[in-house]
Structures are given as C-alpha cells and as structure tokens.
Length: 132
Image 1 (cartoon, rainbow, N blue to C red):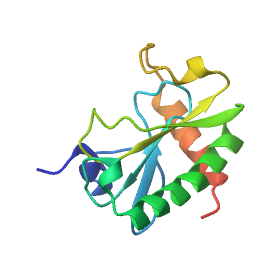
Image 2: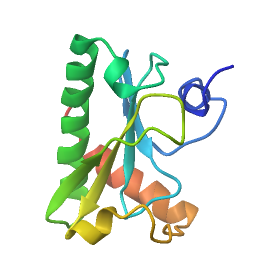
Image 3: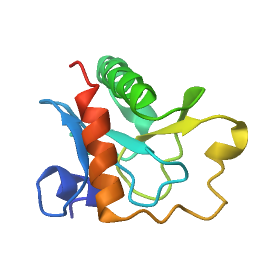
Image 4: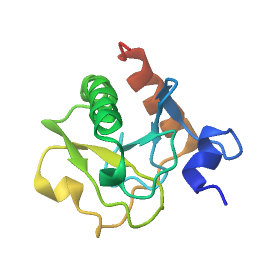
C-alpha cells in the first residue's frame, strides 16, 4: 500500500506544493511547528532516509537546499532548521523549519492552526522565491 506521501505525489491527496522535479517533491506540512514548515521527500518510496542510495540522498539534500533558501526569503527567521525523524510516515522525508530559536523546532509544542488562505499565501511566497 502506498504511503500517504506517495498518495500526495500522485495527486490523490491535496497538498500545498512548493516544488517538484522528476525525483523529489516539497510541500507545506499541514501540522506545522512553525509557519512555513516544509517537508521534502524523494518520490522513490523508501521507509528510512539513510537507506536511500548515497547519490539520491545527496541530490535530495541539494533539492532541500533550494527550498530552504526560498523559505528563508519568504519567512523572516534567523535560520532554516532541518530535522530527520521519520517515525510518523514510512516514507523518507526531512523537515525544513523556519526558526529564531531552538524552541521553534520543538515537535512537542502545540501545532499551529493556519487557515487555507495562510497556507496558500505561504506556498506562493516560497515558490515565488524559488530558483530551481
């Protein structure tokens, strides 16, 4: 059975897409810990990030770097944090999180509740700054 992320890639589940190419996909997390929180995934369904082929993992990080730079321009923050957890969905993924302090990347705090308009505006702002 396809993971929820594969279903998002295939258009079966809607998302706030930031970018995609033939191997990778980036979209807003709908349960963000910080405004602009993005997920970056390989289209290849692999459970654990560090089981990816080294070349694919390196390319995923290069793709994520482009997303992070666009996100940094779109959201006023000191840094874009990167987190690999991978327990919640059996599909390799990384979290890109705008942060001004370490507390901004705390997954135990209540998630932000954003409107559809806020998600749409954030996705457009990031995409506008994206240079793929």
